[in-house]
Length: 97
Image 1 (tube, rainbow, N blue to C red):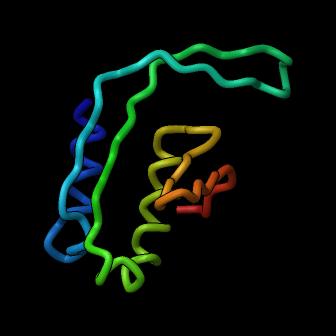
Image 2 (image 1 turned 90 degrees about the vertical axis):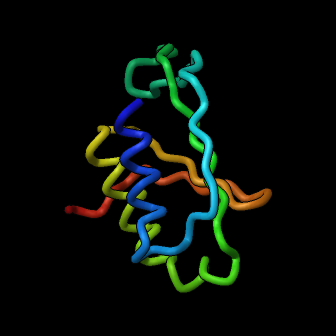
């Protein structure tokens, strides 16, 4: 879980000032369908909930986007899901770092 803690520290770093709280849940079993193989893939997943300062959220979108793309690349994720309120955004193609 050190990678998740490092990620939270980066989002909450003083220069970002967007994070006001966070929780990293223990690994849980998850599954996803791989359309290339036609099979379900089971794996352990880590869910991270972060709570942001709404007044600073909009001005931090660029840095948040950079973070999500970098995290997806570095962890070789097929998809990173970011939820804001009732909206879920699936990021499947990452910017080059």
